[in-house]
Amino acid sequence: MKFSVLIFSVFLSFSSVYAQDDAKFGTDPETCKMNLSLYSEFYKQKNYVDALTPWRSVFNTCPESSKNIYIHGVRIISEQIDKAKEAKNLELKNKYIDTLMMVYDQRIKYFGQEADVLERKAVDLFKNDESRFEESYNMLLKAIDINKEKTGAAASLGFMQISVLMMNAQKIDKGVVVENYSKAAEAVEASIKEKPDDADLVKVKESIEALFVSVGPDCDVIISLFQPKFEANPENLDLLKNITKVLKKQSCTESKLFFDASEKLYSLEPSAEAASNLAQMAVKKGELSKASKFYLQAIELQQDANEKAQYYLELANLNKDLGQLAQARTYAFKAAELRANWGMPYLLIGTMYASSSKSCGENDFEQKAVFWVALDKFYKAKAIDPSIAESANKLINTYSQYIPDKENAFFYNYTEGQSYTVGCWINESTTIRF
Image (cartoon, rainbow, N blue to C red; front, side, top):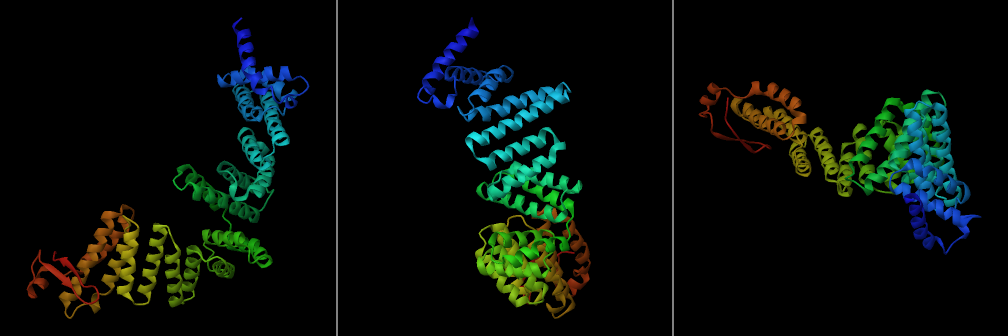
């Protein structure tokens, strides 16, 4: 009796909603509405088992009646797949997997959104039956070629996972995996730009990168893939970004292709990353003044504080190599200001101080005193940034042996605890200690 009341009450509530558009309810609208109402009520109660029969009737007899048939159908059929897995009934599991695929196909047929639905279909197929990875791969390939940077994170990660499986099964080569990585990474990076604080997206990006590295593509493979594409379409911004990103990821930045693509990219769309790439290439060619110019442009264009700090540190190293130590220190301090608790700039400053000992003093004491200010920077780096403690400790152990001893200090009328200012370009105060 209660069950009959449920059917009747649900039917009344739904029939008023659906009354205005009977055409989509098939040849028997009343039965369709009844089953729609019934399965929907079971679905709300998470009673997916009892929802199955009325849902199946709707799916077969009035497939255009509601998109929810397909949204809910995935959950209803997935429940049956899980039960078949638990019962170790492989035949039944495979039948329900095929039904799930039909749900997605019919949704595309009646409600479109092919690429988005293919993403879900492929991911679900791979999740439920990894042996059908080639089918999933072909679905994802089609979906990603349509959706491009709008591809979902789950589909992007699945695409990379399955690409590796396809390569291992000798169905695609490393070059295709490289190309697929480029597509997957581009989509996830676009998602991260929209949601920069989404930790799950960052994890997906890291997983995709780890899969790419595991494949071990060498520079020759990457260049052979991208060189013809670059020559055929040298002004395609998306292609140029992909080329520079992948080559940089695999440390192939000394290649002519990386230089040509970076230069072209910068001319078409000046950006911090493109300027940074050109700066790094100029450094490798020994064109340090040119590199300095590109680093300054990268700094001007960069909005992210951490990235800007990295550019400042690289510029500081460049100026150190040019012998412009005071300017190098200025850039290192700017890097430290932009990225809190980063020890690397202080390690650089400390090593520059230590290298100046012979030129920063008129006598043995003054020259050795330089190591006090160098050690100050190493200790500061270690204190604010535990990740570089090992490097800092090595430098501390190396240079601690060169500071003045008590006898040397006494000879020049200095005692422990006094303040002392190191001269020359350093011009920094420290405390005398032994």
